[in-house]
Image 1 (cartoon, each protein chain N blue to C red):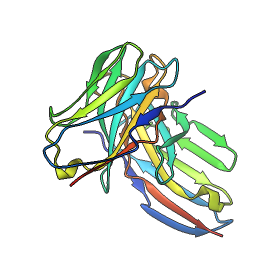
Image 2: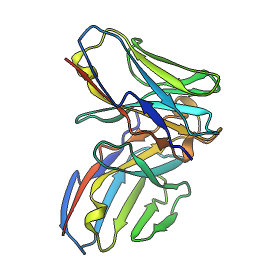
Image 3: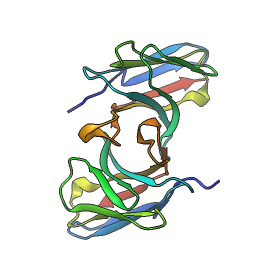
Image 4: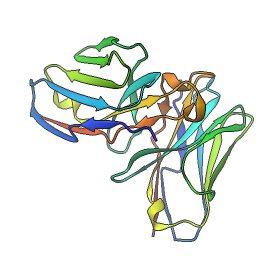
Length: 114
Length: 114
């Protein structure tokens, strides 16, 4: 069974640019979560999508947005990139109705903003 | 804001030693999870505990959820170099604005020397 897949694995962008990160969940998982892991800050919750809808959102500015497609894959968009957006962006998925019982994470997208 | 405090932040031990990592909060959680993360990879779920006082064992790893569901511990017996990694605790609540969102501790970096 394929795990959670994320693309690209690495990305370098210039301040002010926009970026789109992609995630495919495990087959049968309908929920997708996005987390930011910046150096020294631990994992911070960004967004939760389930059945195509945004279910919860972390304390991030509106320039962080995303969507979930009918096949449950998801995109995370970050506009007007800032240097402090440099981080590992992790996507995770879980079974329907089971967000509190553990996620399966992908390997992440390493974003560097210069 | 729910906070999880993990201790110690760093742990450097010799192969064969025992160790305990702690995860504490002033909040009550409906479930708590432990993950292990290696460099360049996403966190991997080790265990989920949901009942106060619950103890789970995974080979040489023993996980405990506090009676009041505010704290947890991870004990490793006879550590091996393969146990080296970042250990993260994460907690969630079943409802309200925190539903579907995991709050992570800052992590414990464990290094086991041969």
